[in-house]
Length: 275
Length: 289
Image 1 (tube, rainbow over the protein chains, first blue to last red):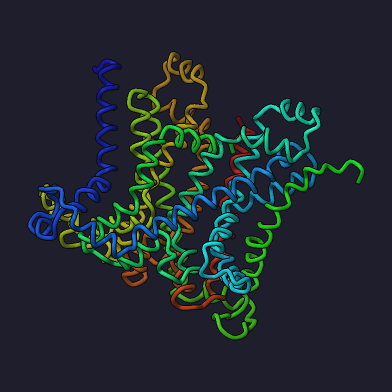
Image 2: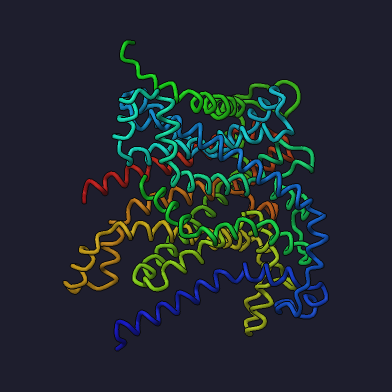
């Protein structure tokens, strides 16, 4: 009969082993990216003998890394700014005013959370064509902003309901307009939830390939995942191309996640279980 | 309108953008699903013809069953394993945070990247899994993971589970954090076995987390197409052709926009049904508690 403490050690060790097995493909990706074609041929599963970065050079060029990374970061940042301002502005009355209109609008917008994006894709394409927004980052930023609005409205409204109303009322008594109250009182208090929202927006922009494939035609305007797809094509099993490209494309997000994992996990869980 | 609250105007930017770029295309999409629009020329009204094809043509019914199997396998295993991990980790505070983060790492890769990695791991020659099986003396388990039509769909679903199981775990752990410790302690002191505690105490109290997880996993599997797109292109013999991938190919390769719209409308209906069933089931559960 094991003591409670011994049992905990056994289970902890077991779970850590499970964690390592789950992470093996990620370690494999990094390890493979550093090996030469010859090494891989001789020993498919071995570890790199030396740190060989030769594969990276050609891959970076092939997928136009600097440019596509710059595009992705820029689109992501602008989308985050647009979503957080437009959604929080709407959340202010939606959280504070209780009437039928406000309730209806809230439900109507948050319904967008569960609508898969495919249905409106063709009409959206034709519409953007008529507006002259094809092959432009502006068009893509509009698409991403609208796609993330339901999430933003949902996050901000539930968050705002949990912050006290007194500060706003004081500002109003001092004669501040609604817009000023929003800008100087409300917006600064929304920082924590904005972080969580930013993560979700980043993940959608970073991982999406449908919208860039549909709306962009110039390679130089591609986002990172579209560049990877263009570079590797489908069914590519050349390890010297595949793994460096995978590392390069996922590294920024992985590093960002590991640095901020505590806040990210907290925000993620809060957003999910509250509903 | 004397008592009109001017703050209501702040809703307008969001509402107008949402109506213009989300609801309007969606409505147009529904009407497009009743045509044979192919990108050029005028769309001809065909009524429910596209929908009839989807439910009659073996090529499309296969897509529907594939999607159902794929969704079912992923929802069950991702949440089953996630719940099990969370139940263990909840009792192991020493390693909980570290493992929660570690398990989340795969979900921070993109679907595209995970697809490429696993396509390599699954490769029949030189791929990680078959080499590993040979190394540990289980060569008889070697398979053509993505090329054998009887297992390809499950191989792809396995990658989905691998990628997002950490996500389910994190949400279940958040659910556990909300359960009062007094209640669980009381049950323990009363000598209720761990398994019974899990079944009769944890599971009912985790109901909100279960709903969130099942809804997220359902939507996630329905709309994802990246794995079969990168790993198999729907093959072999349409064994891995899912709804998301079929819509994607109809849009980008076959240019059958009317058909793509009809499948998308069905996808929305599927999500709506899952959400509604869950909601009413959970309501009745909560009433009983």
